[in-house]
Amino acid sequence: MDEEITTNRVVRKIQQLPQHNTIKLNETIYLLWKQRVMLILEGYGVQEYIQDSATISQFIVNEESQLIENPEFFLHNQQDKLLASWLLPTVSDDLLVYLTIASTSFKVWSTIEKRYSTRSKGSLVIDQEQVSIILAGLPIEYKSIEAVALAALVSLELLAELLTNCETRQLHFIASIPLQVNMVQKKSGLENQ
Image (cartoon, rainbow, N blue to C red; front, side, top):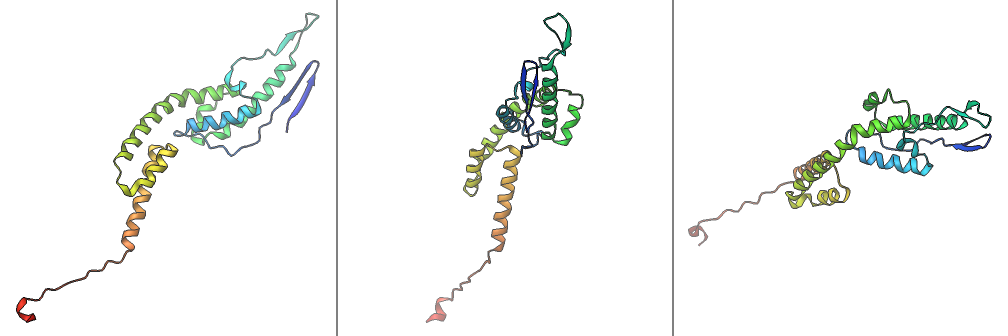
């Protein structure tokens, strides 16, 4: 629910983001997590909080040259805290330890970016190269896995899991086929006459 706050000349809505079924950030899915979270933040129009570290002054000077509380500060701070508290549950528990001192949504976001962006870009390229090499050497029995891997750009770990599962299914299939052996005996030429 949006809350509209009016103070003097300022009219602004506080965006309360509902929980979405976002994936939790972990060591391997930074780029996918970032894309989904950015789409949500842009949809609510609050992406500037994570993209800009600019702070709003808590006090301003009015027309009478008096120092007064800035109504924008309260609204900005409230929105920022709501957004930071929305971001934290989208991160896996083992990564939360790195965000304990992040007090704004910008600090939460920038800490995550510093930790994962360069690693993810590099590991994604290396993973995809390894996946391509593995796919090129697969026999025909694994062509369905190859099609899925190429269409979805799967990680190296997921490819290994898919191949292992496929191999296990093939072994179970082969083990379930009853084998028959037909024996043919050849009689010597003298006995047939």
